[in-house]
Amino acid sequence: MAEALAEPLALRIQQNVDLHHLNTFRVAARARYFTQITAPEHVPALCAWLREHPMPHLLIGQASNILFRQDYPGLIIDFSLKGVRVETQSAAQVDVAVNGGEIWHDFVCYCLREHWYGLENLSLIPGTVGAAPVQNIGAYGVELSRFVRYVDAVELSSGSARRFSAADCEFGYRSSIFKHALRDRYLITCVGLRLARQSALVLDYPALQEALREVPPDELTPQLLSDTVCAIRRSKLPDPRQLGNAGSFFWNPQITRARFAELRQDYPEIPGYPEDEYVKIPAAWLIERCGWKGYREGDVGVHQEHALVLVNHGKATGAALVALAERIQASVEQRFGIQLVPEVRIV
Ligand code: EPU
Image (cartoon, rainbow, N blue to C red; front, side, top):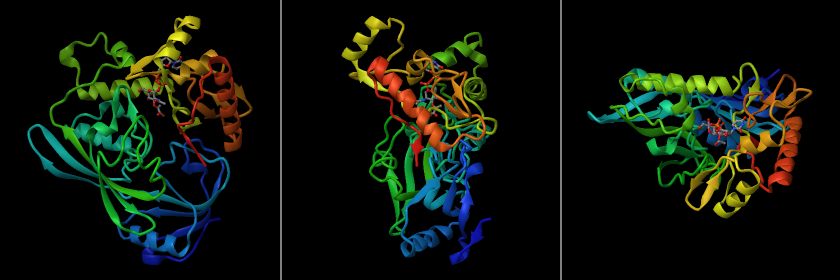
């Protein structure tokens, strides 16, 4: 049973907290300490507490991109401060400030109701708004970075607030400065986004084109696009409430054009998406070709509908999922000479 420690400024630090329902993989793990940030005054209190009790700390939104391999030896911070505020708006666009604790998909739905457009392709991505810039969430041809004006964050060690411009965030494919150089150093409190007030639908992604092929152009609305993205996701990606998972487990690898041309000789059907001097290959295709799709051993497995999604069928441990990931990596490396790198954070 979790027990409360000191309560500086009503911040509650709990001990020995069960994380089972707090991670989308639904693996059993406990946090030595746990706190939930629900009020602005909790932030300085948290920084002060960490200064007094230096220890490893980990921010989780909905822990939708984290795999706990073991119990966490430090403090887990759940930032759940919500709120959306319009900063400025014109006929063409709206600038909104969104607190990091908002649930991402709820915010996308809110935008659609307000007729603020741009985020439709990012519908149904699990996680919070504060976690979204960390890995520059992306789906169906759109990445968050194209909307970000700034990210407000607090340095946990000093308690000082800093505004990061979009350029400061160093956004890349599923990455940002918060995932690399500044990992675990800043608490993202608020994200400033610029959204459109006239819809401009992004329909290039093949799966979307296929799904919307028969819809007359005048019936293509942002709401329909969002609904279609949700339907595609639901058909391929398991709902974490029913089957533990964290979406794509590995990054899609980028290989040189020359290496891609070689692979094409052996596997003429291999899909690849050219990006500058590289070609991005779907990791799912590589994993499926190695025979892993739908694989199950005990409670660990690979989703039947999508080879890039590792799943917990019930009581899988984080360690067993990591072991499966390593076996998949080894077989892809052996067959294709390509190293898969986990996109999910393993702690
Ligand atoms: N494919 C297979 N086997 C499968 C599934 C897919 O061979 O079981 C091949 C097909 O050729 C398919 C291609 O992989 O055309 C791409 O599949 P999909 O459209 O599902 O996209 P993905 O590359 O597997 C990426 C993101 C997803 C995002 C989708 C849609 C990464 C690591 N993943 O997946 O993001 O939803 O595109 O944009 O970039 C996530 O980050 O958790 C996530 C789900």
